[in-house]
Length: 115
Length: 111
Image (cartoon, rainbow over all chains, first blue to last red; front, top):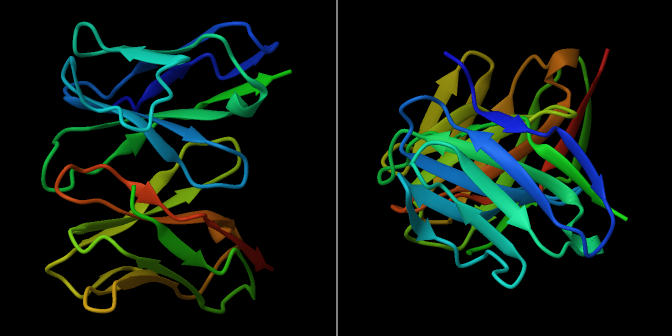
């Protein structure tokens, strides 16, 4: 079974530029998550989708971050404009269920460096 | 989200010794407690999880204990091996399955 796929693996941009990350979850997984992991810290949830609907985006900085999962499969996370403090690894995860603690499987992440 | 405190932040042990990592949480609604291992340049990988109706769970050299009354849970790794060296994260979730992670423990197993 293929795991969660993410691209690109690395991205370097200058502040105020825009960037987009792509995630393809495990086949059949209805729930998709985006996390931000700053160096030396644990992942922090940004947004959770159930199929193509947003379940929770309370920790997403909506003035600059946006995410979509239009067809309920792949998802993109965008940052516009980027700030220095956005430098982090952006992790995508998926699970087969929502309630009851479905196991979340993580992709390899995209490492973003903002100069 | 609710905080989770994880200790220690770094742990160095000799190969063959045991390692223990402890976490405390505050959300009494939490009912799912997974532990993840993260190697350099990779995403977190689930190593063991426990649900709130169970006090202890074991899988070969790895065990997790949960004390819901005291709101703390622990990871125990016995007979550590160099390949156990990584960063370990505790986490917890409520019915919405939104995970809150601890700050991580860097485990170093010296051969």
